[in-house]
Figure 1 (spheres, rainbow, N blue to C red):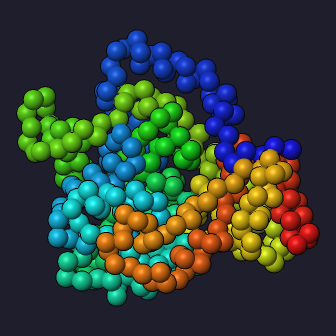
Figure 2 (figure 1 turned 135 degrees about the vertical axis):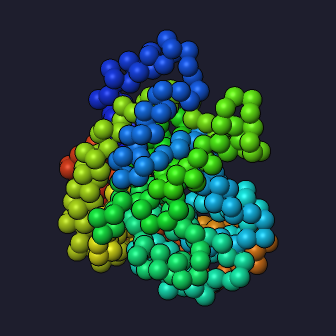
Figure 3 (figure 1 turned 60 degrees about the horizontal axis):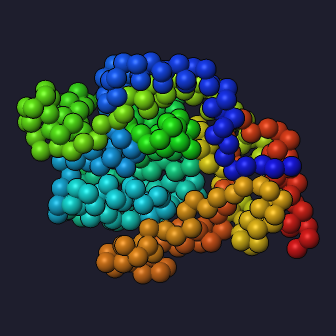
Length: 368
């Protein structure tokens, strides 16, 4: 049995008539950048997360940079973020001229709030908790800490569409939250895309201006901005997919529960777990495995797709060697990077496929 790590085609086939209809509508309109399709999607995406404002961007990295830029983060500032994240989080900080300050993760792979305070200096301006793998961190404790030190919070929710903590959705805990609509995300475009949500009207207005060359009206540039606009085709496609997101999220959670049920007795792996009060959306299903590389090879020989998210923590990336971190600086992230393995996870995954993955994992360790 073949089990792909991700299957985008099966989802497209279920939505194909609707997708083709909106593509034709946009092409017929000849309104290809921004416009009514974008406005309609922004309103719906904001409402889905209980926020009054959403500002779309051309990708998720731009979303994070745009938010930090509008929040006033600049050269000389420091921004605290977890070391176990995709590089885009740190790139967004660098694009403002600020310095990323790394923190290790906790048992849920989220930023370790207990370590954040020791990283705060007089130059600290903001904290970026990354809701990695579709889980969500201890946002109540982090917000109390940030408020005590006068720091802003930007949530990196690129993998966490619709995730909640104590029934409050992502984007409710700080100044803003950045999302990605990369094709493989829980809500994915057919190309690049991103968005920022916020409850702050002034911040939303500033981001709208900055993303469109600093212009609130054509050829009137109030600020020196950038071109972070989303294409109308992507907004229209996302508008078709958004009403299905809650159903897809329920399916992901059910798949995760099935994995955990089947693999609970496998002593050679550690399964993902959710913090009390958190409701994850399982963008990825990541285990920690003994002999990870051997298991990965065994699964792939059985035509089971896998992934590594992420095998090299940021402080060990060559582009961040100038920050001076040494090996051993973040022991949790370094240990996890040697053991983590992402198993197939997408809404259309079938129970018999999950069962085959679990059976193949047990086969590997039984042979060992």
